[in-house]
Image 1 (cartoon, helix red, strand yellow):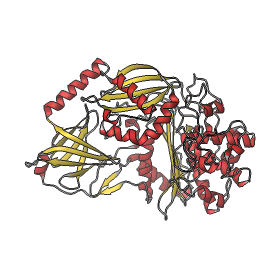
Image 2 (cartoon, one colour; image 1 turned 90 degrees about the horizontal axis):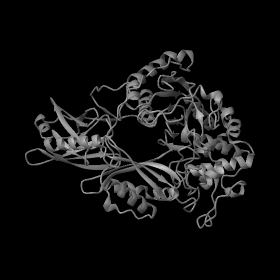
Image 3 (tube, helix red, strand yellow; image 1 turned 45 degrees about the vertical axis):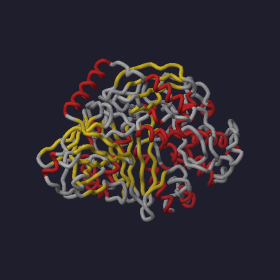
Image 4 (cartoon, rainbow, N blue to C red; image 1 turned 135 degrees about the horizontal axis):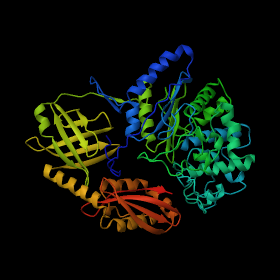
Length: 610
């Protein structure tokens, strides 16, 4: 069950995928094989939710079921235990009706490219060819970081580029479809045709804020090329991939024909193949790595061993310690995100390219997991697998949270049964079966609610809890949902009103007619964000909170898109929101929007399209 986010899109189309599971290919020592196989079987049989209820044995979906639910055709997993790969295995298929995934199947790693790039930078720092705290324009030859009032106060350094503190713009990159022209790296930096992202520049004083920037790693990529004179894929192979033994990995873009047979095909959130296959990423440093889960595990093991001084194939112990030192403005080292407590520090990174998502996490002293998928929903599945692996191996972090359920008077339950409206067409039904309560959104399975007290309830499937407000007779009048730091207050409605809303939604979806005022609202909201002056009175409270939080990133992004050239209605989604394709001077985007009955924008969001 997916609880809707305040600004999210509700409803989900289920698509059954023909899953083909690969023969186990563990990589443990012979004496560990039975133990590794037992771990594999446990994880494959039960993917855990975020909450375990003490004393309650709840059924957990299998890995195959979660892959089917999330439209993930293939997954590759490599588990590190006691400083080595205990097992690696593929599940599912490289493409629908295709070959099974194996430990040698290639996936795009997305932003996990960044920490591998950072290791190459530190290799050159170690050999005194680079300095982390020198103005990067002293190294750049082909292109320079544009000077402005921010760089006049502080110059950009490699340390800041690697820790996302350089004040650089452009969060990430959509890549280029197989039928599109691919820009040079300088064209990407300048935002010049055929680049599909804005120019990369400094828009705040370097070293003063933390803000994730793939753009900073593009600058790093060109700097490495200028300093060494080597093509980026060759440089990364010679300095990092080769010495570590990442023999299946490459930064070559597009993937060479010799490796194509080992590669998975990418899929979107609905299980539809990405047209033309994998996108090409000239932005190799932040997004261009093709690799396997086993090779990512080898990277993590190299960091672990270098940190302990046991196997320094790329970096010295001192340089690895520098890599894992927090940058001061966030929980980031040089290329890696840092976590865990003082007694169990860990490092990692997630990644997403078009149709691929991956995750890598490892403790400084021994355990970890690398997960790669060929789906835009793969990140959610990777988080669930990480949680399950953590529980299986008894890690101090990432495990499900344990909660205790209490017994309430059964007479209370009847007062909670009914329908609760979250948005224009979003209604949650609360039902009773014996002495158990369940909640359910349209198109999703029902899930059990567990009592923390008479009025406070929680779920095992998602990180959410609910609070009922009642009248003097004990009948609920409203329900408040708490999830991901957000609070959604719902009102109780009659069964007749719930049926009316359901019928109205069905008619809207059937007729496929644009919602009056939706296109005008899109034009208005885009213009207001460009000028940095959103009118939050035009938005629902939840959407307004999200826009306020994201405005510093949205404004330069929208400015970079250029003028709106065309808005074309596409369809009505099952949740009632309208889908529009918007063509800007620099790039195409797909928007979802839903207006509430009072005319306010209840739901709004966008993603790049090709």
